[in-house]
Image (cartoon, helix red, strand yellow):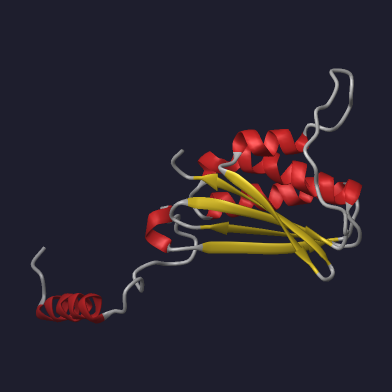
Length: 163
């Protein structure tokens, strides 16, 4: 089928729009982006201090990582979120906030609560039902920190994209 003059003019206008479009304008919502292409993504949620919210925090983590094209981090990130949120439930006080921030080098997971007690790694006995959370965090992450605030603390850890 021959190309009409109107079709050629339309194609020329589309090509011109593509050349003058701002950087990133060709991206559309819902398209998976590689971490290096997007700079940084973040997601934040705050939950009441209830055990059922550990599962919600894991679901948020898996959903955000899938949307950001970083599904390969999901299993480790879910485990880290689970440990940090459980620690906040057990030793913290008040609402729990989780922030996930993905850059081109790492996923930062931060969990905040209103408790004053600082987390302490300990050696769990073989028959202890808990006490291994921070050992798991240490094993999976490059680093983890605690930031104290006037109204509580934030525990953050970093999961590298390319360890």
